[in-house]
Structure formats: C-alpha cells, structure tokens
Image (cartoon, rainbow, N blue to C red; front, side, top):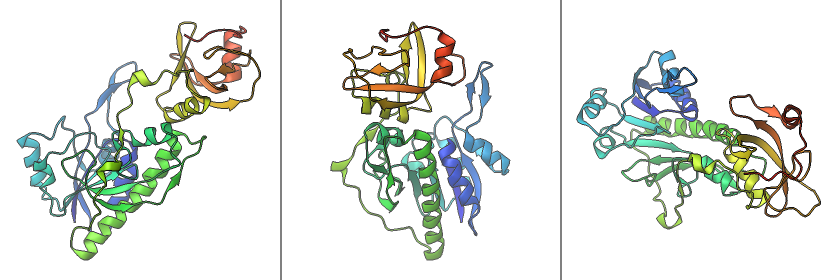
Length: 310
C-alpha cells in the first residue's frame, strides 16, 4: 500500500514512525509545513515531521497551499492508495481528497464532535473536561466534520494534567489506532465503515492566540490553574513591575486574608484570585531560563507583598 503522510508537529511524528514499520506499506512522500525562522538568528527550522522524514530518506514537500494544480499533480504522480493526515495545518481541497483509492484519514486529538479545530488538547484542559481521547476519521471538506472510523478509550484529565502529558498520551494512542485502521484496510481491501458525527454536539477549538496568554485573576483559582496547565508550552503570564513573567507551573493554596484579585498576598508570591489563592512554582522572566519560585524571589530581592499585578 502506497501512503502519503501529511503532518507537521511532534504529535504527528509518532504516527509516521509507526506507519513506516507496517509490513506492506510504502511512503513515497511526506508533506509538511514550510520551515520557519526561529531563535535570535532567525534560522529556518524544519518541522519535526520534516526532520524525521529526512532522517528516513523520504522525499518531503512543504507547499504553502494545496489549492493549486501543481500540488495536486505532484500528489497524483505518487499514485497513493491512502493519505494520512495528523496535525498538518493546511486545508485539503476536494481535488486532493478525491485522489487516493481509500480516501484521506485524519488522526484528531479529541473525541469528536467535541473540539473540532486546531487546538483540541489545549481546549480540553482549559474547559475542565474530565477526559479526552483520539478519533480516527475520514476527512471531508468540512473542519473535522468527517465520519468517525475509530474512537479511543477515554484519557482522564485532572487539575494537574499538563499539556505535554496529555499531548504525549494522545499521540501514542492515536498512532496505535491509525496502525489498526491501515492494517484493516490492507487485510480487507476496502475502506472502513464509519459513524456520522452528531453536528448538534460540536464544539470548536480555535488556535490559541497571544491575547489569551495573559492570566486574568478575576477568574476562579481552578480556571487559572487550568489555563497555566493548558498553555504550559506557550507560557501564560503575569505582568509584574512592567515585565511579562511566564508562570509555567502553579498550584491552589490555602491562605487567609482580605485581598482584592491580582494582589500578591505574601512574600512567598501567593496571589489572590476571584475565589481563592494560587502560588506559582516555576517562573520565567523574558530572555531567561525557567526557575523555581525560590530562585525567582532571590533574584528580585524584594518583598512583593501588596503589589498589584498589572
């Protein structure tokens, strides 16, 4: 079976790695997002999928769009039986969806129809969902609206679940489910039956914007901790004395005192929220590495009690 793989971030690497090992599968090409400038030198950095594919000597294409005849013809030239998509980042037009014999199958990091869209893992944590999971789905022209082929077991989410923990669990589960689907197609010689989604139950996980990263202490302590956990890779932040300081880990703490939200209530960096108090454990100042609360306070050398966050 000839499979074209389309994916970009680390989430997709696990799937590509497992698909390569399936007996009878050939991957003639991989499609990924273009390299992007990063770091102080703004050097172009390949996506994790591109780097992995190159290490396996697989031809890689990084178009900015698939909505042109040139890219459609390139895909057709490989005569794929199946296209697998995992967090690719580009919309696949009908001209691409119609190419492979067995269609286009996507690994989506939620139990659909909940959290269709670009950031399902972030939103599951942000919303306080009790669990998440993975859906293997047949792609159509809509945004994650296609039929569901396989749904994983539930993966619990707690108040301590961080983005990376859930991401890694779902990547592993999704890659194993996809292998099962491909092996089923190879064994039966036909596309898999699927269950239609209930559109009335759909929710949408829009891409996280920079505007969402600042912490709002007029929210509950639970909501703030969820935000810190959900955005731990990006870094939600507070503004302290004119500096945006990332909080990468924090916890709810018991503390007595009559304070308004946003006020630092003690020298140990306990911060008042709408209904309680939180205490950061790991922080990061601009241009610096992440440090413990103790090291952060030692660096400031100032009692912040009574300081109002900006």
